[in-house]
Image: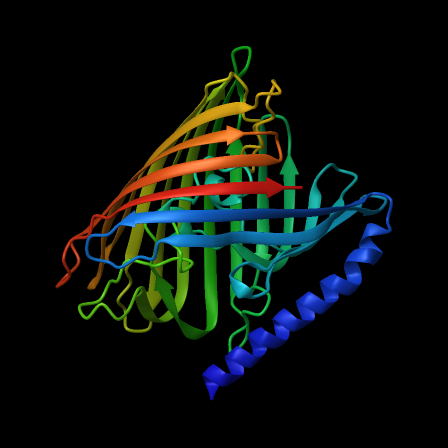
Length: 386
């Protein structure tokens, strides 16, 4: 019965979001300072399997539509939903107000401030998927209230949050979460930028919950995203930590960008405290570098890099590489140790139209009773954003 009720809640949420967006978009668009925004990402995957079965073929990774812009003096707003995967899911649903002091107040659903790669928009990340440690630990979007202050070389953001839209628990109150992220970003030389940041996220549950972790090998497949199995029978694809009362997540990040070159490194860890006193800690890191062969720069901001704008009608070419590691073994939980080497090349027809190609050399090991798994995944993407 709980499963039926949960399904019904998600379906009703999707229906309300879809109808609301359909009715509201013409109204929002009638504001002179409002713009329609969206993105479409169509992928194709070919996978050399090892132990886990994957599906070759096409996949619509993202298909988003929304509106964004000024609402009144000092106020702006954004509404955006994703129609990929034959469902409707909410993304940003938020208002912002610029205070006279220069800071900004955020109200609604948006990303919890943790992780440079998580905060970076999907339209401008240099590889097709974010690293495993980001996908496992960073919280993504939640409903809440935040305050942000950004100066030229330093800033911070704090957030008080609960559940995401449609994600309220079946019993008990919503979780109570507090997050904070700060950064220092001095200029280095004529065109260089160094970014150093740290974040902390604390979340308490009214009623103890089950928390699940698990990830794809940093690429989806034709089914939408097969994960590595983690249990002995291969029936489960995620670790489940039961009766979690609270969690603590920590992150540090470092970025350097100069001209056509950029490098990003992050370390994230999460500790889950449960009623049984078994408190596992999972962690991981990645290092990612990019180089734009045609000489353009990736525009830096504290929340990630922006889109590359080709300086020539012939477009721009970018090379990217990442090494990542994620440890899901601790306190009797054996999700394995995962390493990924990802190589990518991007062609920018314009700042709004991009073609991507990635190859992922994945490896997962040290899972009790399960063979090591080392598939090679090749994927391509056509991406349009507006």
